[in-house]
Structures are given as structure tokens and as C-alpha cells.
Image (cartoon, rainbow, N blue to C red; front, side, top):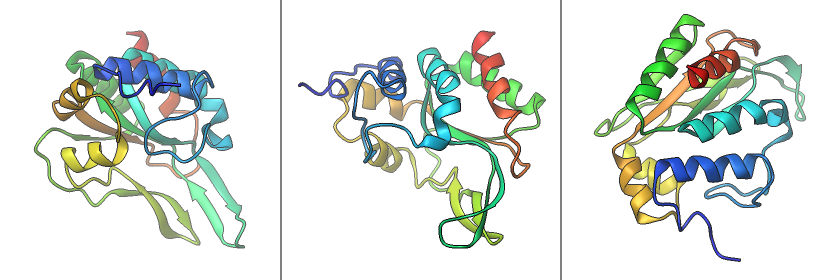
Length: 186
């Protein structure tokens, strides 16, 4: 079977492919080792697919989860978070406004931004475990997230904003997703 990602000619085409992957219509996506999203994301698939089709091409997301004991005996907790690429400036503005109204932190990396250390979104025993908004510039981020993608789509990504939305409240999972739905409905 041919690689549909290689044929993508725009950020919008990448969004449609990502939605298809989230919904199980295609079994691969660039830079991801599994054939489907993590189980913790199952309840988010409808809103994530809709975001991707609207032009917010999500590359990573996680629900907010209260503190629970993990596989290694440590206590884990998560903040609801999502990040990805937005080429459409009007959509970017709607996402920002809707997120801010819901009390969600917004980090927008425009082309030319070199580095951001990131914000912890998962911790284990109150020590940072995973981060979002961590990037070392557009070109490196694109090379990491989009290997094997069509050249026209990559050129459009280079002009896009890398957007991260994080709920500042640990464990809360009911603010970010409705804010996304509101932004793409507008």
C-alpha cells in the first residue's frame, strides 16, 4: 500500500489523514510507533478528529487524570493537554480566544522561535515526567514529527504555528475539550 502521508500537499491534508488515523481508517502515522492512539485517549477521539478536519493538526494529546498509582508504584497525575500545527490564522485566533476564556494556557510557537523548555503535563511523585510545548524550533520539530511527509505539506508547516494548549489544573478533564469544540464550531 502506498504512503498517504507522502502525498499530503497541505496542512489541511495532514489534518484529514490524522483524523483518519485517529478513527482507525489508516494504520500508520509519521513518528508514532503504534497503529492506534493510546487507550487513555479513546474518549477524546471524536473531538481530536474534528479538530484535525478543521485545521488544527494535533500531534500529541492527553486527558487530565487525577493522581493514581502507576505501574511502578509511583503516584502519577496529568494535565489535559494538546498540541499541533495550525496554518489558518483565523482558526488560530478562535482556538486562542476559546482556550483563554476556559482558563487554558496557550503557548504559540511561530516560525523563527528557537527553543522552549516545555511545561510539565505529567508528573510522578510530584516530579516532572512528561512535557508539552517543548520544541527546538520549527524545522527540527517538523523533521521529528513529520518524516516521510510530502514536500508541499512540509513547506506549509514551516509557515504554521505550533500550538500547545494546557489546562493548568492537574486532573481536570472537562475544560480543554469543550473549548476546542467551541473554537472549531465558530
